[in-house]
Length: 342
Image 1 (tube, rainbow, N blue to C red):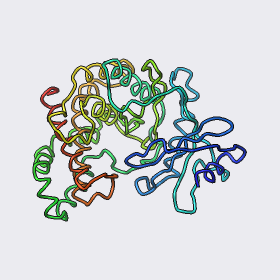
Image 2 (cartoon, rainbow, N blue to C red):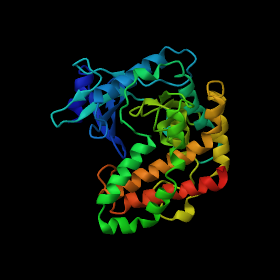
Image 3 (cartoon, helix red, strand yellow):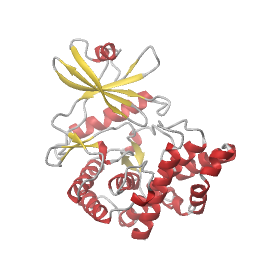
Image 4 (cartoon, helix red, strand yellow):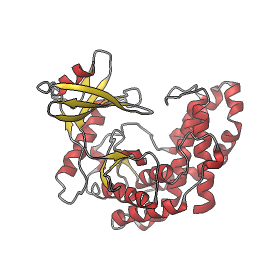
């Protein structure tokens, strides 16, 4: 099957081998070995992303913009059109695929090991945002409507809470209580954006550490995984980075004593990020960055909790309580952040 799909993009190339590169929460990604080099083939989850043509248009538009920017220092993702001249292929099983170049001599870091990596990650995501400062965000579609909109996530949560199985609700009582107690605070960024105090920008919306490719010296080569590229506010990207980069534990660690907030990593990430975006952000945007870290971590905890209460229909899980443990992890991290950042 993979060989046939690869042939829909580059029929003149001979595929030797393929292997599953990433099996993520949402999509699966394959490394393709061919007679003319390495490529990355990605299966896009059209249940999560209902508008695949729009999603691919977002990626292609941003790639074209960055490729023309001589001051953009990272490698730009290159996407290939299929034989139908579209940048995606729809297979007989109802799946969508896209193909891109493989960036060689690179590595992915799943966990921050030192302050230098945190600083470099801040620079990488800041560089990405700053070089899209003059790109009109209104050219992009919202690939997941309401993705980081707190009122939308609470609407989902409230609806799910009324329908949740009693045993699941009882298991989640502690975290439901925390979510409800912080409802108003966690809407602040949304309200300020809606009031015009925070501008709309092009944002990546999935700025975890593993979405940066590093070289052997821990220097950033590229920001990858552009599926969630869309209009947003800078705090989405800053907050999501801090969530993943400054936690001392993976997001499904069940020993909550191990879930701590690394202030050294935060300070280095913050410094690296600001070194790239200082001149484009307003004073209000800069002032709200610490709140952004709490807000985006909270929203991830809320989404995991909602999915657990809803019977695990969104995220891939490995065992029945997986989403509950993820939610507890993220909401604990919010508490750790608040003890330091407030």
